[in-house]
Image 1 (cartoon, helix red, strand yellow):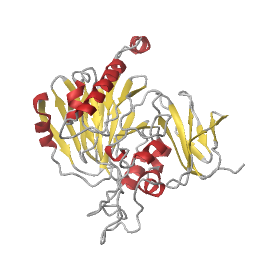
Image 2 (cartoon, rainbow, N blue to C red; image 1 turned 90 degrees about the vertical axis):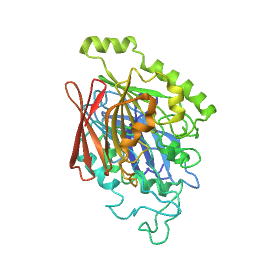
Image 3 (cartoon, rainbow, N blue to C red; image 1 turned 180 degrees about the vertical axis):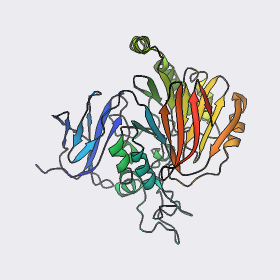
Image 4 (tube, rainbow, N blue to C red; image 1 turned 60 degrees about the vertical axis):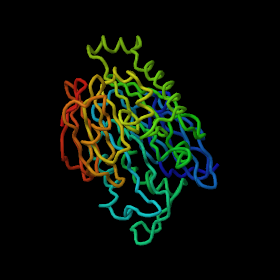
Length: 390
């Protein structure tokens, strides 16, 4: 049997709430993972195809594992209670038919540098709020992206995410959200092949919410890839109403959670993590009702900036979309107008700089350090008691 050459490997939390090791290998049998000295065979998740000249492998890992290896790769161990969480999103290099970022210029597309800076921050967990592949067209004339691959195929996925993200893969387990660039009609085949947290690789427009529970933090992950930004689609709104009912059930404290509260004397915080900001998105907003009221924070991306705001009777919204894709202007103040009758409380903070957020647990909540691509801090915020302040 041929030995598989490891092209990429990482540890991510799957829809079953458990950590899984993923490996992308050459056209050979899947390797075995070695977990705390015990050999665990990986199973084939996706086989070679005309667009994807590789094999994707997966295996569930015990949540208490200390040492995880796949081939020559040392993977980060699962985390029980993350104290430092990096949040980022919208990381790919945008290439459209008419214009393009200079993917070959580190200043114009800094995601590789951001990935190295994330590793140097030594996070316990990395949360990516979606949009990985932006190389959707051939490089236009005069743009500095010559010879870039494009389309929903292996070369483009390697160029935009799998290769530059290697330092992140080696530094911490991942929680990965799907963005609108990973819709079935765009880059959904690659998303379900490589990164989707479910067992299936068949592309679906909408997937069910799921929860990942840590000792003092519970994250509900919500797929908003195909929601409408500026209008309501009745059919999609019906799907989202059903999914928000699932979110309500996930937000309910179980006996196991109550035992954790009694033992720690602190109720676990609850984060709702998605791609499109639900307060500004018509499909989600129409469907959610008061579902998000029990959560302590809403984390999203989609807009290529950082923004933080408090919303009456609902958890604060933090948008983390500065991960490398061409930035949007700092129009954070206008987000308050978009939210409208939900009533933003106080000023809206915005920042339009390439980088990422480091969320560090404090006694009362979280300190948020906004970092530039080189890891330099440019601003600080606090998230505590269902309120964000920058």
